[in-house]
Structure formats: C-alpha cells, structure tokens
Image (cartoon, rainbow over all chains, first blue to last red; front, side):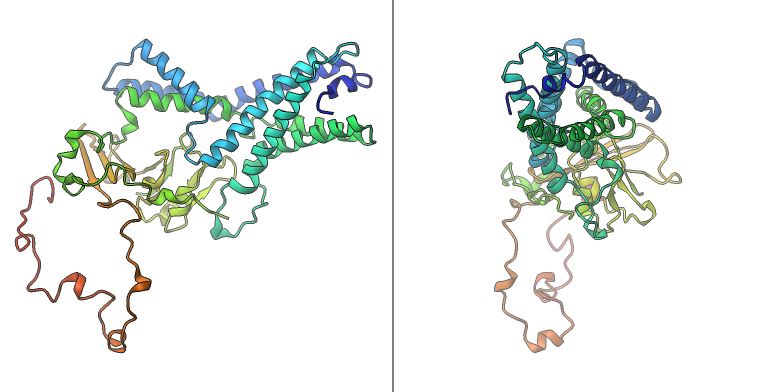
Length: 279
Length: 159
C-alpha cells in the first residue's frame, strides 16, 4: 500500500493528461488567488510603504551584503525553521504541517507528471514519501486544530467550533485525510474508492480555490513581514521599539538599575512560564 | 489610549487574550489574529502590549493630546528582569527608560500564605488588612518620607 502510486492505478479510469491539467489548474488558482489577495488587501503596497518609511527614518545605512545576510537569516530562521513562533508546540506543529505539505505536493506532482502513465513504474520511495508527507500534515494539523488553536474561554466556545479562519487548515486536513483513505481503499481493492476520490478532488479544489478567502497566502506574506522586521532592527528604527538592554554594561550603571546590580542576568520566566490556555 | 494589533506581526498565540483584565482582546474569526474588540472599554493598562512576545500590539494615542508622529513603545524582557520604554515626541525628542520589574528570579519570592497562622477573632473584626500595620510600617515611628529614609529627589529620576 505504501509503495504503490495511487495515481498510476487511477490512470486506467482517468487519463494522466486530465490529472495533469487539474494540477496545472490548481497552480493557476493559487497564483491568481494570491495576486488577488495581495491586490485586494493592499498587503504588497503596505509592505513597500513601510519599507520606504523605515528606510527614511533609519539611523544606519544597510548595505547590499548586510541585506543579503538578512534575507538569508530570514530564510533559514523564520521560514525554514518557523523561528517566529514563541510557543514551541505551535512551532513543531507548524514545521510538521509545512514540511509534510511540501513533501506531499512535490511527490503528488512527481507521481502525476512522471509516473501516472500506464507503463511507468514508480520507484517505491516516491509513494512512501507521499504517505509520510500526508501523515506529517495530519499529525501537525490535527494537533494544532484540536489542542493548540486559541479560543476565548470567557465566551465558552466549544473546542470544535468552526470559524472562517479554519477554512485553510480544515480544507487541508480534509483533503489530505480523504487522499489517504482513498489510497488505502484503492490499494485494498475494497469498493467506494471512486466516491472517495470524488470527495478528495472536491476538498482539494476547495483548498487551492479558496486562497483569497483563506490564510493560504500567509506563506507568501509572512516571510516578507519577517524580513521587514529584521531590516528595521538592522537600520536602527526597530519599529520604534526600545533598544536599551541590561546586557549593555553601560546600561547596568544607570541609577534605575541599582536594584538589579547583584541580581542574576537570567531571572527565568515570569508570565511566560505558563502557555496561554483559552479553552 | 486603546490598544491595536499589527496583524502582520501577530501570530495568534493568545498571550494578550489570556492577560487582558477586561477580556476585550480576542482572536479574530477570519485571520486568527488578536484584536481589541471594544477599544472604548480598554483600561489602557498596557498588559497586552507588554505580554506580546512579537511586539505586535501598540497603543493609539487620542488625537487631542497625542499629535501625529509620536510613539510610546515598550519592551518587557522578563528574563533580564527589565522593562524598557522608548518615547518619541513629535518634534523628534526621544526618551529612553530602563527599569527593573523584579529584583529576584521569578517564582523565588512567593509568600507561603498557607503556612501563615489563621487570623484571630480580634483581627477578623478589626479594620486592618492582612499584614497591616507591620508592612506599611504605621507602627514604626512617624510618617516615612524620602528625607527620613535618607534619600533625595533626583531630577530625571523622580520628577
């Protein structure tokens, strides 16, 4: 089951060219949806305006080399390792979902475009990675949706309440879960695989077709926001945030720091000892 | 001066929702980011501003006394035990403050009230609160002033 290409088995019923056309259509939907989202919400204009303002107010000049280093740090820390999350559980759930999604999409594309024709033999590793990717999405996504999602306790909402913000995560989870069930049913030869495949296609269309209304586009604007944050620290504006710190020996001599003269440099965690609980 | 959230900075962690004494910081149903549902009910306590790990919350000054271009931002660094403020005036003047928020590591100076003896009937019927007058030192000589404590008013510190 884990080493069979589910799309190759389907090619008897559905030509590979139709599956390929569907994938292309979904890519177009994501690109068009993201462009619509950027235009409609004005996020690109907001970022560029902010960047210009930040540049004008900056106290330090940021050179090309430093800019490249900021871009690399943003890519490595904020994007590849989801470094912006302060809650380690959320970070882990996000990493599982993100890398699972990348693996799942890449192997789906590979299986449909390279190995979906009737004669093509799929290397066992590709479907295995597809399963691993999909399971990673399920683990990260269900963990987030059932246990990490923030709610407001005072209003007594059910942990199962569904709101607009759940469109992305739920359509992703439903799509991937149906995909896995369909692949398992198809491999076992049981009936109902056709119906499951139909539901899988509907859920996948909702996922990629709802980009302007879901938070799918966050994978494009979040890195831009993280880059801007790092840049503002480098050019001295720091978004007007205070830059004084006890790490600076000169600041430790301030009159206001008298009471902390003999205190340890690491006082441990205060309110952040406890993660927010909202259910 | 009610708070507002920079949506691109917020990651929806919920620290502000947890800490808001007025329960007006909520998570938006469309983007799952925090927002102030009722700015007119904001106590302006700055709890959410200080608790936000992403510095995504800011305070909007009223137009009649906080002219455009001003900024009051705060950074609470609990691991260092400090809080820093940066105040920018419209004319470009900038003031920076750094103060302690604890003098002992967090959690090491919590009074063990369960071990304290129960109050007597006279204490229950009295008008003094728990630990009074001992800790307000009303029974310890005259009124306590800066001078009596051997301190001086320092310009830029106390006034």
